[in-house]
Length: 310
Ligand code: GLV
Ligand code: MG
Image (tube, rainbow, N blue to C red):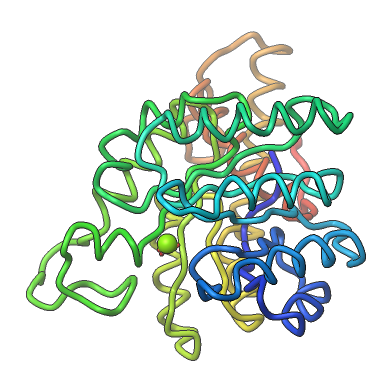
C-alpha cells in the first residue's frame, strides 16, 4: 500500500504551484485537471501537467493526476495525453464523480490500450475513485470491486454535499440545525466499508477553510478515528497536521509492537492463545488490531522505544 496520509491537490493550470509542490512533503501529490482548472484552461493544463511530470522531481511521493469526470468532453483526451506523455512517471489516475462500476471499467480498458500501444507495463497504473454523489455512494460496493487497478476510494465532500442537498456551505462542518451526532458519519462509514471489503484505502477529501488549522485537524481526526488512511490537503500548512493525525502516536505504536511480540512469544513458546499482557487480555483479535497500528506506524517511519521481555 502506498502512503497517502496527506494528498496534496495542485491545480494543473498553475505552473508556479506545479513547481512549488515538488518541495512539499505530502505523501501523495495529485495534479488536477478537473474542478480547480477553468474550462478554458483545460488544454493548457494538460500540457503543464505532462511537462511537470516529465521534468519535475517527485521522488518519494505517490504521483497522481486527476482527470475530468465522464460526463464531460475532456476525459478521454486527458487520459490519452497524460499517459502517452508521462505514463512512466505516474502511479495512479484519479477519476472524479464515479457513479457506477462502468466508469472505472471504462478507464481500466482505456489505460490497458494505451499501455499496450506504448510499451508500458500492463496494469501498473492504478486508479483512485472519488465518491462524490448519491449514486456513487449507493454503488460503492460495485465500484470498489470494479477493477484490479483500484487502490483507493476517495470521499469528495464538496460535490457530495451539493449532490444530496445538505444545507451548509462549509465542507466538514455540521449543517446548522443538525444538532446531534455527525452528519457525515454514515457517508464516511459507507465508503470505508466498501473500501475495506475490497482491500482498498479510504481517503477523506478536502477542508476548504485553509486558514482554520484547528478545524482541519478536527475533521481529519474524525476520519482517522474511523480508520481512514489519509486526507486531502489544499495548502502546505495542512500537510504536517495530516501526516501527524493519520500516523499512530508513539505510545500506541509501541503498544502495538509489544502486543505483536508478546502474542508471538505466548502462542509459539508457551502455546497459549489468550494471555495477560500487564492488565490486558490479548488474543488473536488483539494481534489483528495491533497489526493495523504497527503497519501504519512503520509506514510513518516511527521507531519503537521499548522491547518485550517475557
Ligand atoms: C472534491 O473533489 C470534493 O468535491 O470535495
Ligand atoms: Mg469534487
